Image (cartoon, rainbow, N blue to C red; front, side):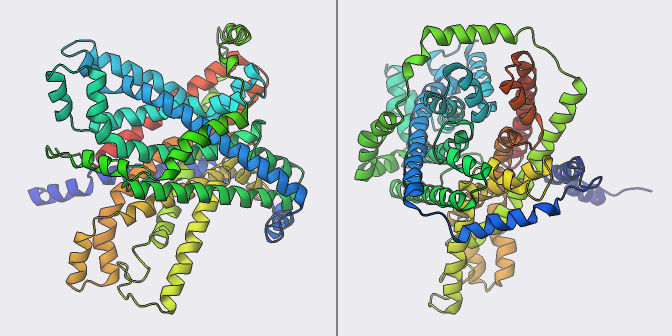
Length: 572
């Protein structure tokens, strides 16, 4: 049988890049479901339904006694102060690390040098190690050195987030147009001065937008670190859940919800005021050369002139107040006792004690399966909720509701918008380990409770990011379809989805890397995987096995990071 050229081309189009990745993703989900044991054993616990019912009933009558409100007020300030201090330190470290990890910096100071590329690649490789370790593991490690000093919470946020900020900042700098930089360098200007007056102003909006996003992440991490004794709302939530005081628990839940909502709203207003479209910009298209008038530089100047008074107030009052309120002892960083303990830990860690290879292999598979199920739930749920959460679709005058008149359907659209955004905010505000503990009421400990907890938490994050992406869509192709009388369903399928789906998938792949790191925090409450093993080894000071388990986890993170980057490049 002779196959025609047309049949070959049809087969090639079917087995294209996207089809292969989609098939691999479906196979990975099937493998992950099998790894949960859902087809082998009974994983549901019907005896926990009454307790789960009590938990949800308490949501309607939280504890509002003066004593609890006082504790809640103090815990909220502590959580917020940890987030401010951690973000400040991570941005400080990230700017320095981002400069050293950027290709353009080394090309500037070492032009035509054979060591230029190896240098920035080595720096990025070095930064990948602290980035791969979750802040909760950093917290458990630093507690063994500094005790329960507030410095533990700040450093646990600053170290991994500083490495993450450095990676993102270096990528932003490398993607920024370089013509003005070359002009100043050819004029004899020093590299640092040329950077400050050319690349930094052009990348300013992206840097500010990502800083706001990182502060929101720091607030969530500050709540998680409360579980290991750092204080704040996370600590109070964990204590209330352990003692089954659900009324108090919901008081802290609502406070965390309000605190995250205030930060989210303030961040959105400031970014809109400065002209930042999205809190997290992941490029899915190769950037084209920009004209020499550099509109980003003009946008920076306009945005800088419009910075409201609240930003100045934040820099001059909020940051010093947060450091004063936390009262961390920074002298412990260079204290002799710290060096002595680190030397002891290093001596106790070598030679590494390799546990059973079969156990590591099994737990690595569980960790990977948990992250895949979590990101699948978050990706699908976030996409479904992003459309009613966006302001330019179903509201009066939106793309799918052209009627600008206020009627019953418009009121329903507004209510749906507010409800959807509240659900997304609540999902991302509540720490994943607390959600896992609640899920364990009705599902036996294992991969599935951890995947559900991480999926719900990341659903809130992805839903908001995707809603922002929908609000910033290029509406010209969609409006062109509407002008031709295209029905709403066809407009959605042939106009909205092709424009939004590549960015949606890029967000999903980015959060998959984060989900893998976050398997550690649900492992703390018995969700399985390498996180549980690592937590047990740290608690028993078995540093010889910690090194091996941590190395396995870092290697797994690198693999997922590589796969995610490869898939994202295929979307460009």
